[in-house]
Amino acid sequence: MFGRLATNSDAKLVNMASAFALAEALALGLMSGPACVASCGPVVVPTLLAEHSGLRLHGRYLSTFLATRLCGYLLFAALAWEFGNLATLPTSARSLVFGPIHLLLAGALLRYAYSVGRTCDHSCKSAELVTIGAAGNHRIPGAAALGFLTGVSLCPPFVAAGVRAAEATSMVAAVLFFAAFFLGTSIWFVPFAALGWVRRNEAVITVARMAMVLIALYYFYAGLTILIRKNTYGF
Amino acid sequence: MASKILPAKESRSIGRSFVLTIPIAIWSALMFTAYAHANRSQWIASLITVVFEVVLFFMMVWTRSTYRWRRRFFVALGLLFPVGFIHEVISMRGTMGIPIEEMIAGRTPFCFLPIPLLILPAALTKMLVFPGSILPNGGMSGGGMAAMAGIWLAVTIVVGKGWCSYACFFGGIEEGVASVPPRARVRKIDPRWRYGPWAVFLAMVLLSLALFEPAYCMWLCPFKAVSEYVAARNTVGVVQNGIFIVLFAGLVIALPLLTKKRTQCAFFCPFGAFQSIFNKTSVFDVRIDKSRCTPCVLCQKSCPTMSLTDESIANGKTLMSCMKCGACVDACPRDAAVWHIRGTEVSFKPERARLMFLYAAWAMAIMFGGGIIAEGLATMLHIFV
Image (cartoon, rainbow over all chains, first blue to last red; front, top):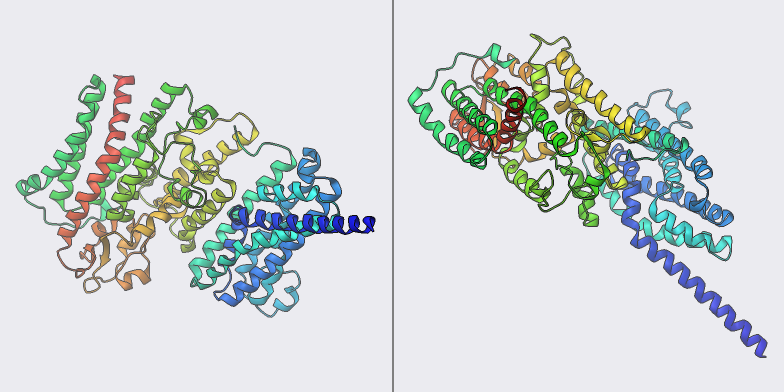
């Protein structure tokens, strides 16, 4: 009897600990949301501005972006748990992961900037599968690619969550921790849908495309410096 | 360019022009009271500067033309700024590079270019992403950021993007370079390049927020090449300085020589894009009187920032990127391009509107640029005489 009571209280304690961990992840996500928005802003804002106006379209873009970002988070959670902690891996190993991610992000942004300017013609159907940011509905793969790549990029709140997830008792707990963290941060992305109200014309779309190119150049540079293991700053 | 196609305008009387110049002469003299106990070269330099400013304003009033006189002041400002600044930096530090110790101490000289990059990070985190101090701390910038940003905001609300043609101590360099060749070699420029400043502005605001650093100053400012650069203590520093030099050589030297336009201001400067917003708050603007316009598009050709298009001329307005330099007004042979005060008829006393704008803009130019010109002159006198 005493043994069963002990097992029940242990289970309760485990449940309580899990609930606390999830609440902690949610709180961490909510608190560090502005940092996440700042970190993903260079990708989200110009790509959204390059879209046509309309709340529905922007809602769809953001949903795709956030869904694939969640996939990136969960993958990172699983890896963080598996390897103990990605953030404390040796620099050489880390640069092999995050350098290419930056380069891919740069490539995806450049592709997006290029394809936004193309009008849909008779060859559009065949290009649909590979096009990242072509006209109308076909831009969703672009949002998916960018969401996933930002999901697995290393940013300060992400590192904090990664360290905590690495301490989880199981991979499932680590993944759940990241899912709750994702939920907390995602709320901060909702206001981006308001960009759908901004009236679009040639000027707005051209500015967004040019900005994407500049930001892509930065990511390209950052990816290269990570790979060749140089400090990002010049002092 | 504008001076060659200047229409013959009836000059104002000398006596009246003299009287109209008195307020500026007083203001100019007041600005140099700080040099009352200065050394001899500074005293002579400030005297020359006061005379220079007053004579140019007198000429603007007397001849009723703006561009060619303003340009002389502006080019002098652009060319003398690096002279005085580099001299001061080297005297204090022994190098043009900013050492990390100066940044940590918040003694980095403040520049107005990163102002738009500071707003979002400051709003979200209550911290500045510029290595300077908000309040005066005795550093090189002396006055601190709050003072400079406050004064800048006050004057820019009044004169709008006029800041870029009267007080910016960088724009004068390319305006001077653009005035060197007799004619443009490259005439056809894709009008979409006009969106460049907005793109740089958007990208830099977002990156400044993401990286928590003034991204434009760190990576893209062409004028780092002639002011102070990142101390190149590793490969990345060398890359940064390489970018500054390439951008300076391309946007401030080569392209203005080829196009006779202010290419850095028109196609790149994020601060210029930010300033364009204040053209909406300014009471002064330049309009095209459609009843007089032919259109001969001389105004369009003379504009150094491509702020006039066929469409905008047909609408009787300049684009919001107009820097109020006066080139189009001086170039128009039929006086169709006019200075204007918002809320009045387009043809309502344009010369009065011009004078009112000039008082505000020239007072600002003297306040921000006069000291810089005097400092540059004093340095040259100190070194060469």
